[in-house]
Image 1 (tube, rainbow, N blue to C red):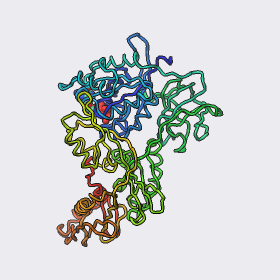
Image 2 (cartoon, rainbow, N blue to C red):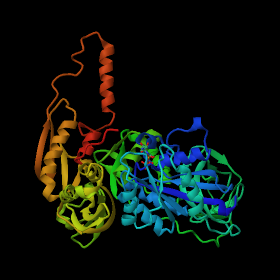
Image 3 (cartoon, rainbow, N blue to C red):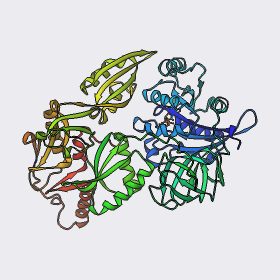
Image 4 (cartoon, rainbow, N blue to C red):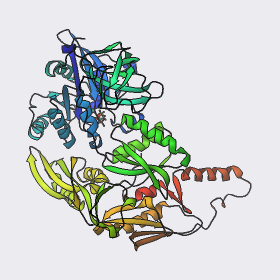
Length: 601
Ligand SMILES: Nc1nc2c(ncn2[C@@H]2O[C@H](COP(=O)(O)OP(=O)(O)OP(=O)(O)O)[C@@H](O)[C@H]2O)c(=O)[nH]1
């Protein structure tokens, strides 16, 4: 394929604005799959993605498009996730592209996440092509939304394509625009190989499989390559593209995107963001790679069965290969035994990691309430970072406790400014800026991250009926009047239930927590006292009354099968429990600390 006939691009859009549906249309129009092979959202391979209807991992697919000029073009389309937790994946995908389609729902308008991602694309010098989707909807307002793209993002949008990914209206025009308006890859085909590892994942049969973008030179099957950061050499045994079915090839040319397999069995063998070149050629420079991301939310995960610990470690290592934002280190809890303290980008990321570990790796885990990272200035002048409330030094040793502050940019229609502002105040927010941009209002608010990571996103959606969107970045640590709220079960402090809260909300939180625990801890043969405490001071308590009757008592004598069934049922309910002292504590209790319900899946 001639290099000037290659187009590498991605689609950036807010969740639900239709990028997966649009990608499906592209695949259909370019004949990548037969009609019977099409199932909705071909790119969302992961079963969790399908169930939740969201895109988590970036996927790449190669399409061949015959343009109006009669020439065949190779498109490498990289799908990107839309949720705020995964913006890191977006910047990675952009690195492999020269252009981006900015898809905006014509009935909704521009949302904060699209703005943020679009800026990242512009910063990375991508050509951005605005596309209005869902113009088939009655309430679509293409004019207003075009105006909004210009006002809020600041790129020309009056000639934006107007399409319906659902009906297929004008979708062919988008493909034609990709050819005409997005640039082909640069790069020197005769130079020494320089390829970027955009993504890597672990395949049980093949070992590490990497998605690479060839920036300079080309590479053939059988050649020896070197991973620059480790200096290790490997022979390429397999290479190809997803079209969207796997197609094996003998060569990847300059500018192309494809996968390679090089018999790398070591899970740290091909780190994402690393550069590949030919073996024995150290003179090639490393490509810029990716910005390292810092996890924002930390939680402990513990196998219910202590014997699963080693499996758990291995699964986490495999998962990290595919999800470099994931960080973890061993943690030992008095209550829950051996597990890992894991760092995530946000709550959704955390939920997805837990689900993947359970489904793909067959583990049964208990997750503790997530916490953000705090900075502690100790009396002796030392500054330490604490991401686990249980590890916070005793109050007597702390001279200052600092919490992370974020700057949130919220975008919404003017009608909701009042209720959104109220929500932000409730979350200890300080308004920094308020601007009217076309038909939208952009508000900047500084808020403690701890207040945001838990349920802010859901609350924001509900107070604005789904119209407000936000994105945020960390700005600094700031001193605050924070205390550790401990939970005691029958007099024993349960380390895994501790949380760090603002002193003003400690009392209501303590009361609320005791009540929630009372609801979720099952009654046992004895009274269970639940107490919330700050230091040695008990601030709230509740009691789970002893169970008086045997649950099986109501089953009359002989019917053993019924009795068995009932016990089975009980066992089922016990699955996600951990014995803490003499009391069994269910998973829900750990999440009750958050004060937010675990969502039903
Ligand atoms: N009416 C109408 N509905 C559409 C159109 N395009 C997509 N949809 C619907 O909008 C919803 C979201 O579409 P997706 O393609 O899953 O959105 P997405 O942007 O890929 O979302 P994430 O993968 O979660 O980031 C689905 O229910 C689609 O059927 C369109 O042109 N018109």
